[in-house]
Image (tube, rainbow, N blue to C red; front, side):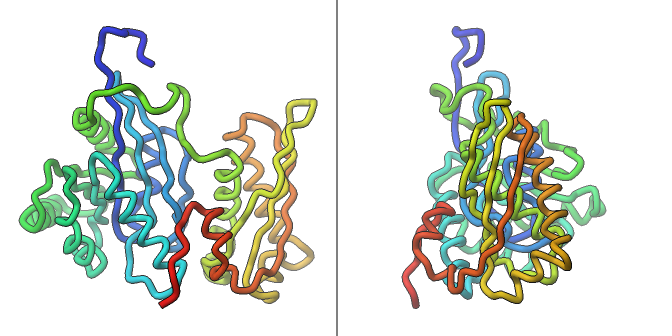
Length: 305
């Protein structure tokens, strides 16, 4: 809690919604000041709600990085989109993130159509503004505000951090008065086991962007604190077919070795300890039809249709 107990504290939730790959995870990481959500060129990387926690003076803001909203085609897609709208509905403020380069494209149009259903105050965030001419930005902002009455419009670059200070300050002022929801030094509500699995999944996507379908998943099977202070972690990478298993392993096991090295470095940083990481690859056919896997990812299992 803040040192000055006379100052009223504020705390609340801000949901970030938008189409896939508009920069939600990058923005959450920038606002929180550390990595809490994985970033990948692959679309629909974020699957469940990821909460990152930022502090601005006496205000605690809990950012909810939601899965990208898109037209669902599979069961997993439907679960992710339901999760995104559910996260928006539970927040104190809803922030619509738009890729300024793409503008008002079809996915953004679909979200705008549903946005008035949400009763919360809404803010518009135009991202990647460093890549777009100012006249085009102003026109885009005016068009979007004509469609939905946004309380504020912000222009940021999640990658460089430009504009994020103003965004944080103004969002803090919109949070309701009340006690903080998390300890002062906590930056995410995701367990370390889950965040470690997500980091490994990010490394898989980075190295196998084209070769591997996004349905692959990673689970942390064991997390053992050793007497010397180091951590021994075992993770299993699940894929749908044996051909995908061979891709993840690579020739002579080289690909999985590189994935493990990169993941271990990042996990060591968040765990603040030396990490011994052991990766295994298994085939789990039709895992995206298994309710237990959805619960492990924090998603509701949607009925077939």
